[in-house]
Length: 344
Image (tube, rainbow, N blue to C red; front, side, top):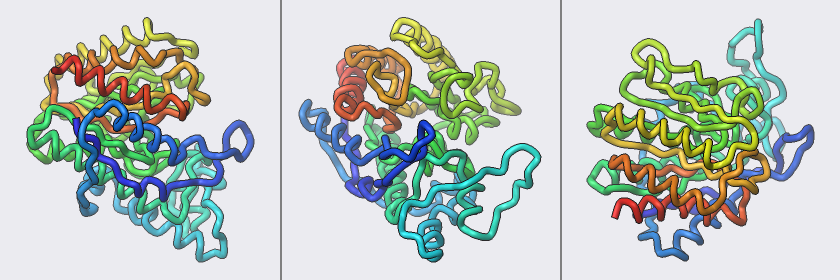
């Protein structure tokens, strides 16, 4: 299995996020990718390659032009006001407020975001562009005939919707890759999100699509971030009716119950008969994750990889969350080696 990786991820290195009512050091940090890359090399998973460069067109197929324009220019606009610290939003256009894009950068930050945990820094745009390149390079490898590839994306992407960012995510790497599979000739694509947090952005992007099946196993939205999406009754609309599968699970869920949800999702993915499969690979389901509340153990991730391999689909793994930094490399690579061993 080839791993695609770029050092440009280090350019997203926020100083603080708002969490627990305080500004604290960011849980989403460069060391996360470093630990995964180290483990990839320790187990000799396969060749590590740099990404190719892509233009903006694959992004435009998923995200709005206004949103992309904002992200590209946000740091310069912020800096032009005399500030050189991280840019965080101040307020949000909630119920019965006008949904109109403001002129100044403080208003734009609020308009295009949904939380205060995702700082924009001097290097954010270059880092997120690189993460997209990493995802698309993996997609091209799989479209060209590789059984699988691992796109070691950072920052993650599954919370980024068509026109807003948040949850440490700016551009939706997995969704961009899924859409690229469609453009490369795949009639049907499935996205399986095994991150602890609901992939609200991916759901938003494909909710009315019948050619992309989205399945997400996650903390129940009555208890867990991002709170306002991810209920089981959200099944898609229009052409997408029945193509959105949510498995909300309560705090304290262990592998027995989580594994049952995975099995059901995999059965439904198999029935969909996708030509390509994208895995939003989050390992914040781990029992020691500092911002999550599931109880999966490191050895369980081998089983996760093996079950995904049993689907027999050309598969792209795209890295998402996981904040138990000392264990993230072992847990993520256990999924990948479990897949490899089962597919051999």
